[in-house]
Length: 254
Image (cartoon, rainbow, N blue to C red; front, top):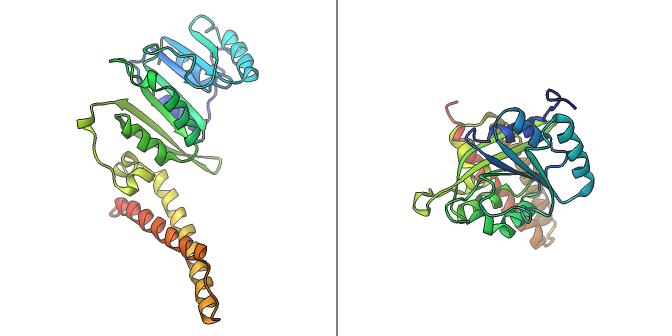
């Protein structure tokens, strides 16, 4: 590998684009083959990167890639689970991408000594694959303000990237249901990819509701008891569709 060879996927480009140019040391958690770590150095977005992963196989490849790219002295590779090998105050920014939201939340919870360290609380760049609302709620509870979000479509899948900074609790704003679920920033800025996602989701939910209503109607006509789980699923789908349409209302007048 040479210094021109790092090619990032669309979603990882979105992650790197969130990194503040004022960063000094970035921790790349779950670094895999270290392409993001190398890209940060190539683009001058950090003076040092700490690349960490829990798996030895990917780390071996990461070390080779880093060495071949010429960044062996400024990218520190560490084997460890989550943030366990990071010292409080050591990084001013942390990247965690490409994993489920609940797994990511667990990593952050186990690393609270990092997130709450004196006046050196790090900025966070997160790309959860699922349970994104749980990450937003966690950040709010830990006095992190979501400054920016981005949503991208890659190979038929939608990805959300969150950039959050520590703040004072009195500076925090309240969120609505649709803002927790889909992201206040993306809704306020009328992110076009999110709009596309919402329209597709609206169609799916409407179809689910139509099928459930048909099942219930036929059961009632035949004098059969409608399972409690079926009615609960319909209520859930109705609620989801209501929240979805409230989110779509942000785009009215586009």
